[in-house]
Amino acid sequence: MLDAVVVGAGPNGLTAAVELARRGFEVEVFEAAGTIGGGARTEELTLPGYWHDPCSAVHPLGIGSPAFRAMPLARHGLEWLHPELPLAHPFPDGTAAVLARSVGETAMSLGPRDAGTYRRLVAPYVGRWDNLARDFLRTAWDGVPADPVTWARFGLHAIQPVTLLSRRFRDEKARAILAGMAGHAISPTSGIATAGLALFFALAGHAVGWPVPRGGSQAISDALGSYLREQGGAIHVGVEVKRLDELPPARAYIFDTSPTALARIAGLGNAYRHFRYGASVFKVDYALDGPVPWTAPEARRAGTVHVGPTAGEIGAALRAATDGRAPDVPFLITAQPSVVDDSRAPAGKHVFWAYGHVPRGWDGDATEAIERQMERFAPGFRDLVLARAVAGPPQLAVRNANYVDGDIACGAFAGLQTAIRPKLARVPYATAHPSVFLCSSATPPGPGVHGMSGHHAARAVWRRLRGRG
Image (tube, one colour):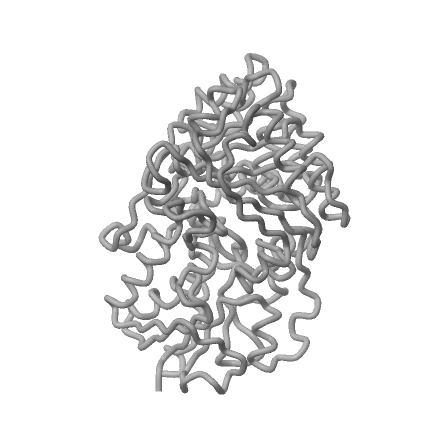
């Protein structure tokens, strides 16, 4: 009998498997797709030689993850590449606000009236990333924080809507760049804890950057898979699991799946009937004949570019998506990994992706709206397009089964579910079945390629197995 079986070879499932295998447990992983990776994969989606990330591409929480940093992933081929600027947020006049590794450079880009305010906002947390990551990338009630004072201070900022935090600033640039970072939650900027997400991303930029893995996001998954095999774990791909009894006998079963899929496979009925899925995105991957012709010079040097431009427009676009309306003027999150990784496209060419927010399950086509928005800030962008691969909510759900109706966060970032996922429980990774556990992004600390949900689920499993022993 195996000690543990993991269903799903995304970053969280692989991390859970590694954490158990390195402690001497016998572990096997089963993945329905033909390759491992889940939300961290790289494929030729458009033309030969153009390597795209179908899901995630830029990884501030990956390089800053306590779980990943405790593993020798560099020895297994993972190399982080840092663009000159982690993030740029351009404006129609050709200027841009930036998130730079330097707090000073970031502050000055916001304008003289807000530079000091930004410095004062981040000053208590600069140099404390390790404690912040350890204290916030977990279940909030799981033990005493490593740094209680910083945890409490950050918590007072984090619980706010980003619209409230933005009132500290006098001009639009600071408000817009904060709203853009909060927009990764795919929820209205007036929602609770959106300020926490914006501030956490900003601090990650200063502490560890917003890098891309050389060769694409698949490198993260491949490094985890290689390390797992080194520890004696096994991985099986192309195996779709429909029922629990199809799996080998094991002392524990860990699911890197949506709560809906877990309940169906494990026979848990309506255990997660109150779990809510959120809005979706419409994503376009591009093969380009050259670099994106951004009007703002800073955007040409950034790995990630947010196209808003104002906090008001960003808030309206996110509100429309969550209310069931496709926005006419989308807020775009874009990534251009080939500005720092020339292995992603033929010489002189580039890969680029952009997504705007749309309602969950929406089956329309937002390509025109996305490209119209791009042309506002990068005139001539369309002329560079060699090929495009489009994916709305239905296609995203096919790419990754955890993206229910296209929800790439595997659960809405709204209300109590912001902190309590997938439901209120002392150990949110455990289920009603004593041998079945959940480790996907539906569990704390939530979405992102950081492996921390898998890390914490593995802790719950080994405590259970050790107790039985």
